[in-house]
Amino acid sequence: MVDRVSGRTVLVTGAGQGMGAGIARALAGEGANVAVGDINVAAADAVAAALRDHGHSAISVGMDVTKREQVRAAIEVTVREFGRLDVMFNNAGLNKPMQFLDVTEENWNLVMDVNALGVLIGTQEAAKQMIAQGGGGKIVNTASIASRQGYAEFVPYCASKFAVVAIIQAGARALAGDHITVNGFSPGVVETPLWAQLDKDMVDIHAAEKEGDAFAAFASGALLGRAAQVADIVPTAVFLASADSDFITGQVMAIDGGMVLV
Ligand SMILES: NC(=O)c1ccc[n+]([C@@H]2O[C@H](COP(=O)([O-])OP(=O)(O)OC[C@H]3O[C@@H](n4cnc5c(N)ncnc54)[C@H](O)[C@@H]3O)[C@@H](O)[C@H]2O)c1
Image (cartoon, rainbow, N blue to C red; front, top):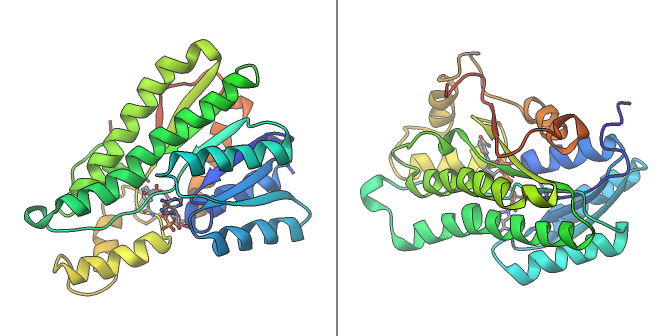
């Protein structure tokens, strides 16, 4: 077993399924103490329980990332259990596609609240804890190819993910003096429950003929010729939580098989 994050305490939001769950499993497997955060408490409980069954150190924390007091409480529970917070993954996110001309204020606010405001709150509250314990720490935020390109049916999602890059850059500048790094990674098309839902929604808004078409069309944009699995994302996420990335801050690492070249 590689032990790059052994003994570190990490809170991962949106870790009840998909990429967050994969990241939580990999970190726990390398010896981290992991807090599995999710609004879906049953899903977070299941991920944490499975990790403990495998002899790893994990708790679950129910939390809505858009509610500052719940984010604070999740960090408090994590610190009470494991003594400190070393790494925060602000990973929770959602998409709700609409045709560009149909996008409503409600749709905009829903997506922006979770993906952008949630990441801001998570970055702020994690940093406050890291500063209170003496400084140092790592914050890793999940961006997207939609942080670099606008896609017709995803305008609030793209706006929210562009905002994640802004939070990463501004946060890196603001927190460097406290020895806290702020980075992110930008997946392309990853086969998770998010895409299963997105595929259905794309049919509902008449942007795709049948389920699977939107996924296939987006995945075909990868130079490497396929969609990603969670396993493609996890090693970079662990790298960003480890000392190997200590001299990197304010950066977004693309893990998209060559979809967006910047
Ligand atoms: N799947 C992809 O192709 C893809 C590509 C690029 C970026 N992303 C981003 O990666 C992250 C993870 O995506 P995924 O594909 O694993 O999604 P997913 O839907 O499989 O998992 C997301 C998790 O976030 C949780 N969540 C949603 N709203 C929340 C809230 N308000 N508070 C706390 N938890 C909440 C959900 O309950 C769920 O468990 C998201 O930020 C997403 O935007 C995904």
